[in-house]
View 1 (cartoon, rainbow, N blue to C red):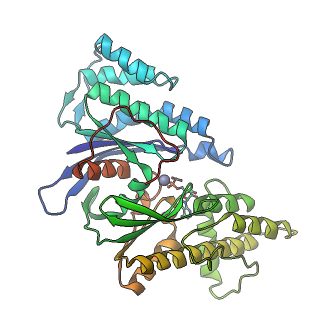
View 2 (view 1 turned 120 degrees about the vertical axis):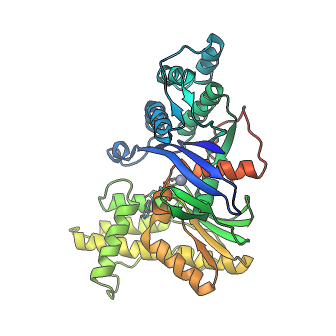
View 3 (view 1 turned 60 degrees about the vertical axis):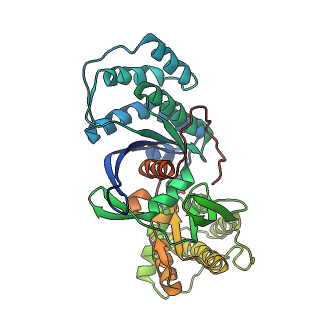
Length: 395
Ligand code: KG4
Ligand code: ZN
């Protein structure tokens, strides 16, 4: 089966084409094409992501990324441009009516597709329909609908958070080739990203219950805000992590000179709060007359230690409470080295399996969306045509 995944929920415009092989017991997944355009450089200038700016960038980049991805996949050989039937062009125009500037480049590519020779056929399109920034999501959803019209291929609306979960269950077997692992259920998934901090009970394949949530900021948001307070660029997560690691290597036994709270660590529930610790960092920094690289390093380490301690403790509680056999981490913050190490150690201590996505598949990408689409199709999910983008879609 060949699936084309589309992801535009935040600040990455991404398209991925995968081919699956079900001839063996565990299905194999091969990446045929994988293109991603990150808007980070643009958003860095403004210190965060503005939804309307993200939307404009998706509009600009989706069509060239699709063309590149199709070329990379070699499933198609483009021919000369050929007009689409008038009725089809009208339909596409209507579908893209709210995405100003998308119709013209899209139809130009569609005309190249119209006369193309297909070496392999795309069986389905999987597109993120939430959660995320709604104007950004809509671009991907409309684009998927227009492409579905041109290619005559069904669409599976796909949950972004499910993408973050399923991509952790892959085993790399060769370059761009993976095997889908069998998960021992129940599993506890910790989803940590710029918009989410959730503990999810995964009862079975694609069966979720959210058992813990943040009451305010998401953990990635806290990383980014603390980075901003320290004068670091957006997105701050990776930069904080780098500073923290440097401090740990240089001064393994240093007592933290600026201790921070471990928010809600003794709350006896599975919820989180990361807004207070960000404010604590702000007050700490305001009291420091001259900020130095050394102090930044100390604060970054203490901040990372504090939040990781909290997520480890809460996840451990969830694992014990639900008798989980597997722990999964997913979402952009799961790219964090300390988090990956500490969760691996936690799983070893509890004698359960730990599933962690490849670093490159931790942050937003379309591979995870194509994969989630595939797993849903195999589970019997039916394609949809009239679905919407939903900013606050839940699992
Ligand atoms: O999942 P993601 O790519 O986008 C959302 O769906 O939000 O997550 C992005 C978040 C950002 O807040 C970014 O700072 C954080 O993931 N992040 C990290 C690291 N890499 C990315 N946070 C901590 N350490 C990292 N190494
Ligand atoms: Zn994400």
